[in-house]
Image 1 (cartoon, one colour):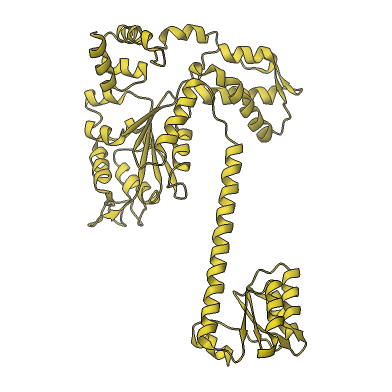
Image 2 (cartoon, rainbow, N blue to C red):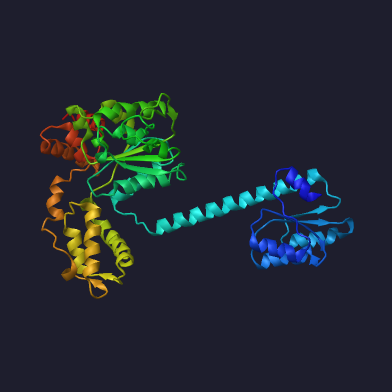
Length: 433
C-alpha cells in the first residue's frame, strides 16, 4: 500500500521484505529516505538503524510503530532515527514528515558546503601575506572600506605590484564573494573581437561565430569583473562598456535583445588615464564611471619594511614548488634585498627568491645563490618619492617639488603625490601656489 502511495506521489520506492534484504539494497544503491517498520521478520528497525550508523550512512530513517511501541520509537530517535509514525499511517502526516526530512538534509548539505568554503578561505588566508608598512596598511584599510559596497574601484600602481591580488581581496571581502571572479587582460582584446569577448555573440553573427558564445560580463554575473590594464580597452568598445555599466544590460553581437547583468567592476592600470583622456584615447565619462573609488598599490621600494615578510613567504612557496627545504635567509641577503630599487616590484622579488631557493645547497639563502641585482638603491629613489604621506607642514613643499619635477603638469604631479587631480587643485589654491 505504501509503495503504491509513493509512486502515486512522484517518488521512486523500493520495497524490501526484511532487514537483510534492506541491508543488501542499501549497500548497492543510494536512497534519500528509509521508512522502516519497528518489527521485521528477521530483526527490527533498531538493528537496521545500528547497521546504518556503523557504516556511517547518513540517510534519514522514519520508524513505523504500533500504538504500544511509542517508548521503543523514542529510543530509536535517540539512536539517530529522524522521526516515527504511528500505524495506521496517515498519508498527510507521512508527507509532512518526508518533506521535513528532505528539508533537514538540504540544510545539512548547505552547512557542510559553507564549512567547506570557510575551510578553503582559511587555507587561502594561510597562503597569503599582507604587508605591514604604513602604505600597505593604508591600502588594506581602503580595501576593507570599499569591499562591502557596490562601488566601481580603480586600482593604480606600477607593473608587478599585485593589482590583481588587491582586486581579488576586494571580491573576497565583498557581498559577492560566493559569485564568480572573472579577470580580463584588456591588452589582449583586439578592436574586432573585444565586443564578442566582453558581451558574447550569437551563432552566425560573423564568419567565425560557429556557435553561441557567453561573454565575460555574463560569466561574471552575480560576481566581480576585473579589467586589468583598462587603458588598453579599444576606444570603439568604450561606449558599449559605458552603456552596459549605466543600464546593467548587455547585448551580445548579433542579438536583437538585451540581457540583464549584475556585475561589479574593478579595474587596474599602470598608465596615466587622465593623459589618455587628454590625448583622446580614453573616454572621460567612462573614466569617471570606473573611478568611483581609487586605491593605489604602493611600489615595493616605498615599502622596504615589508620585504623580509614577503621574502619569507616566497621562500615557503618556492620550497613547496621546488621540493626544497630552505629555512633561513642570511642577514647580508636581507640587506641586499632592502637596498635594491625593485623596478619589477613584488613580481621581481618573487622571481629572485625562487631562483635563490633553486640554487641554494644548504638550508640558507646566501649572497652566492642570489642572482645579480643592479646597484640602484632605495636611497637613490627617495628624491623621486614625493608622496603626500607626510606631516601637514611638509605638504606644501612636497606639492611644489612634484610640480617642479613634472614642469607644472598637474595630472602627472597628482600621480606622483598619489592623490586625484581635484584634490591637488584644492591644495594648490589652499597654499596659493
